[in-house]
Every structure is written in structure tokens, then in C-alpha cells.
Length: 120
Image (cartoon, rainbow, N blue to C red; front, side):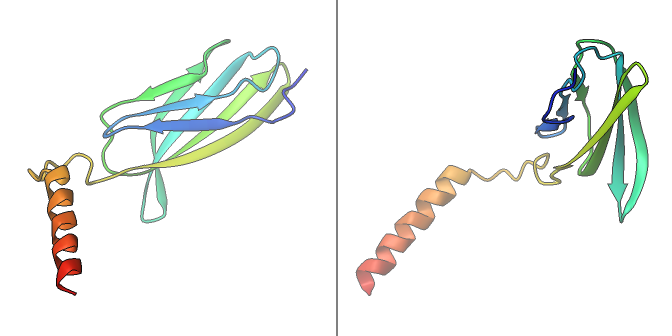
């Protein structure tokens, strides 16, 4: 028996890593193949391929560079198969230490707004 919602995927993304989750569509899953591509200027480059056994639903990707990643999953149960996909982005700015204290900047901006409001 299959899950009526279909094969779903989710991504939890960090600074240079991601966990990609694949639901179990079939009651008895033989295997799930997850292929990860890096996309640059509309062209996909194969990055990783994982074969998940029964009961395995997560792929952990580490040391990712900035950019867009597309993940495709194919799940098999006997002769049946179902496919799904998800995309996520690793920000180029998450890995950059600007040396700025964002909270201090916010407080300064708030003080400036209050000062300007008093002058008007």
C-alpha cells in the first residue's frame, strides 16, 4: 500500500551543509536513490548519488559551496517506482565573516530613527 500524499522531500539547510529528507511512499521500500546536482548558469553538474536502504530517509551533505543544489529521488518497491525533487540554495554570504556586530548595528539604526523622529 502506498502513502496517498506521494513521495515528498524536505531540506534543512545550514551554512555549508544540508540534510535532505525523503518520505517513505511505499509500505515496503526496497531502496531510494537520491542524486544531488549543483546548478550553475542553468547547467546541472552531478555532485553526489546516494542509495538509501529500507528505513533510511536522510542524506547529509557537507562542505557545500555557495549556490543552488537540485536533488532528485526515485523510490522503488518491487516493480513500482515514484519520483520527487527539491532544490535549495547555500548562500554565499553565510560563510563570510564580516566582522560586524549585527545587533549593535540594529541598535544604532534604532537610535538614529528615534533621534530623527524627535527632530521632525
